Length: 304
Image 1 (cartoon, rainbow, N blue to C red):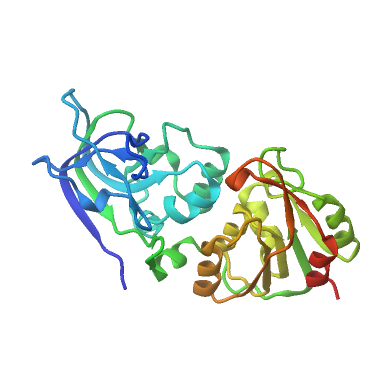
Image 2 (cartoon, one colour):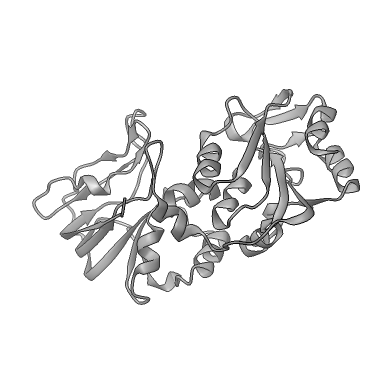
């Protein structure tokens, strides 16, 4: 399928806010000049949708001219790559001076890694406009999303986000994506540092993604024969490249995120998900801190 765009006149948008009803993902207004909701601007994730709220009666800020709708500037690295760059295919094809319109994720500012990613694609953030209050746009082009979990994963999305193509695997090059230097409340694995010492002794490159730029992360992963680590957002960086080697993810929850399986299937690389025994320590959801019960079970998957 080839993705297409639709254009709307006199579009009225409001900032993204928490939804009053938790059955909705979040809430914002998106209406045309007649006051009708624009379904192309509704965000979808599985069976859950964004809620459309009524247009306030206040005087809107006016954005003159033609703008390109980019979507939601998610503050979470993995969600941004999958759901914030879902219209990247259109952004990359647009004229280099065309204004780009974003909804902020709960008023959160751009982070350093956002800017690094846009720089990799040659997209200048000086072109960005943000919906800070009630805003009326003269003309708004709305591209179709190339990724919409769990039903749409278009080739246009994967082609647009790929930065490295055809790098062959380097024999013996093995990368472990570490969580051992994350903050204590960021889903660390107690005992991972001891595991990494053994892996490093056997020639594994221990990579701490949060200490590197996005470009440096790509450089460390590109062409690796094996990539492994405990489940986390760093594995989304594989979207930027062809993956000639094997990927092994050690899940931190059951089941592991299905997105990693979709990425491997659509990009065509070999991947295995393991379920090591972990004891709960603290936290909840993605921030859960766990203790690795049997390090040897992990090492058995990775060492000769």
